[in-house]
Structure formats: C-alpha cells, structure tokens
Image (spheres, rainbow, N blue to C red):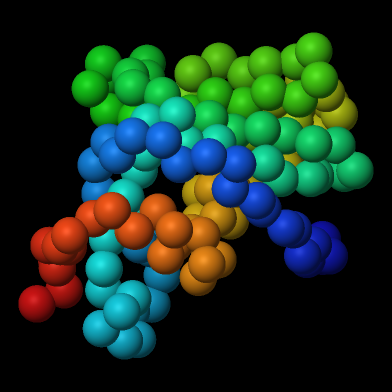
Length: 132
C-alpha cells in the first residue's frame, strides 16, 4: 500500500477570473457549497519527490479552446496543455521520474486549503449554488 504524503501547495498568483467550478468531495456546510473560481494565469507550486512543480491555468486545452487548460513545469521539463491539473502533473512526473504519481485536482491546485479558497473567492460577489 503506498504511503500517503502530506503535500503543501502554495498559490503563487491568482490573476484574472475565468469561471467557477464546483468543489469536489462531500458537502457538509453552506460555506462548502460555494463554487471555487478558476483564474486565468493562476499559478500554484507543489513539491513532489523533493522536486518543485509549478502548475499554471491558461485558456484552452486539447478538448476546448474556451475551457481552462493546465500546464506544469519543473526545471527544464514541461507538460503539454492538459484538461486537468492532475493530468499535467502526472505526465510531467512520468517524464522526470519514469514512474507514476496521481494527485487529485483539489490537492494539486490547492482547493483543499481554506486560505487559498478564500483568496480565490475574494473578488467574486456571488456564487450560484448547485446544491439547492
């Protein structure tokens, strides 16, 4: 059984708001019903296997030019533009370490960190609740 790593993700910049996405996981309070905004240019960094990975949100991916795309960079290595942060990190991790890792989007782009969620929601005046 693989051991669970406690990974620390840091929001580098939020930039321009792109759209809202629902928070995954169990909804237990009204605050958690809010959607989490995706910001164009949003950058996060995460350390995996003692290597820094920087994830960036852009407009467009291989499936849609209007949906968010996720790029990952570590040193001289870069991922392709992917449809999720998980895919961007996983493909780059495989290039560097020649084995697989799988970090959920919530962890990879810090949607499990209350302070980062609050910062991303700062300029959003209302949230459409899908959990009515």
